[in-house]
Length: 267
Image (cartoon, rainbow, N blue to C red):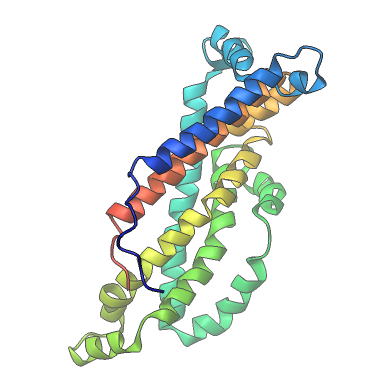
């Protein structure tokens, strides 16, 4: 199809403005519906002005007495756990891909195990993680790791297979050994693709850490939701859901910026 070069160029701010208008419309509708005191929906989904005012009265601290944690500390705790788990999974996936690509025996022995464990949902690992690590940060990081590692490893192997063979041929003709070819040819070629899949699977990692935080951790965004449920506090539940959505959006944008600024090359 021939491109029409005469069509008008849309302003760069238009997509962002349209998105903000859409979100604002939903919030306005939510606020309007929530002020109907006779509606059962208003008690289940309190309007933003109501739950934000309730949380503000507590100084944006979640919890009871001396055990109350600030919202900022909860967000920081969740970020630390999800980033630690994703970073470990990313490094482990690259190393596993290197091992399997350099050793046929490793491919024959480890390949079936990876494909057997990959379909297991990260939530299914929670009971085992609690028994092995107890209730704490290690369990949450482990759950995130298990939710991302296998998918990234399989993606790494697929990206390695996509590397043009002529790249390896040329590097071999220039005297590079197997390890040098992997470090200077294969690794730069697969990093953008693997990181893109890491960003795609961020939602799975985000959900995994939230579920892990609901099993007994005192801080974190998942703990906010669980505390709201235990206290039958819909204001707290809705506030937690909004913060989870905003935080997830920020992290997704941050990963996109990293991919655009740092891993800018493509095959």
